[in-house]
Length: 150
Image (cartoon, rainbow, N blue to C red; front, side):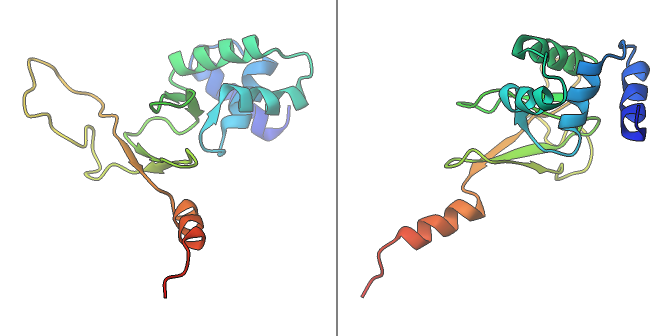
């Protein structure tokens, strides 16, 4: 195993998960790559492990999410996305046009960022906030597509 794979194997062991080639491959794909759907993860894993199946990747993603090694987000109208950034209370911005997803750090810096108006007996641990808007690339494309006014 190369040094990066050893680090990933250590993360699996610390989460009490068996170290397998598919788990290392999926973690490696998600490491530092932002937000990917299962099909994108599968495509990247298949280049390393040609015998891997989409079903196996879904199983690995579910196990990694359950162990807290990856985070699953489900923006409305989009496929579930997975990211390796875990252990903090960050949120997401989603472009209404191209569906690009970007991380947003918590505005307060502690969990949760927002306090509900009524707690109803709950002890809040995490707030999941999704900001919807138009990314800068889509804004520039829209501006370029606007006809010039006289």
